[in-house]
Length: 295
Ligand code: NAD
Image (cartoon, rainbow, N blue to C red; front, side, top):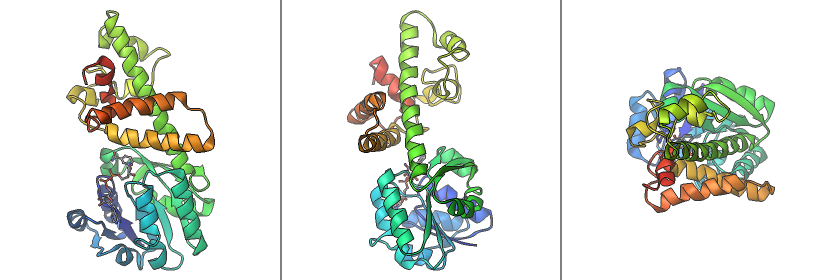
């Protein structure tokens, strides 16, 4: 099967490489010549342009920064829809706003193409290991066609419903993660100020009702979870800038859907303070520094 892969950044690079390793005939392209060189070293063919990469592809996969890039790459800017061969399946794994996802799927459908939105959870390490989680929006038959390709890049593949529902699942999940991380920071800070050390509070709360993934897998207080970014001065991991992007997507979607998300709004404001302080390159659990007053 021939795959055209567009967007070979931190995530797309290793994802394209895993598809090539799995035996697919992958033609990879990016605006960065260095990124394409790395993909070629990893077993992909060189795609000189988006049009050239998708021309004879059975499946097109994209991993781009934001909605505007996805609109431009599929639409008139770079022309996936105009240049793909009849019957090709499109998979966009970028994290983008729900409206852009649905608009691009509709534009593809107008020209007879089937498309899914398939954003991922898991960072660069999961992209490299092929253990990403995919949340897929689209028709059942499109999901069935996409699954064997996604399985070569990830280990959990969920069908979230119709077009755009993958993005909806992704931003709702990340809003929850962003909020629980801040709540966890506040609780550790309070416990410490009241005289408990981080390990003691962790031992109690991680087996009590305050437990969450933010605490047990990614504890923002240094010590209790050795692999967490808090033990390497909050080097990412998942950067606060990326979390802020997802929080803004969640707030944009919430306004449109008239969904009340008061804690999501507060969380967005706090990650934006990390951005204002020029510290959004820290891991998002570095919001602990903000809560402690030492950012
Ligand atoms: P990145 O900035 O490293 O890579 C994006 C790539 O797209 C760049 O190499 C860029 O040159 C390329 N690109 C942009 N416009 C293009 C065009 N017109 N034609 C060809 N290539 C083009 O970003 P990333 O970290 O790989 O993230 C990609 C997506 O995955 C984002 O939507 C991000 O939110 C999401 N995501 C990232 C992570 C993470 O930990 N990095 C985790 C989950 C989801």
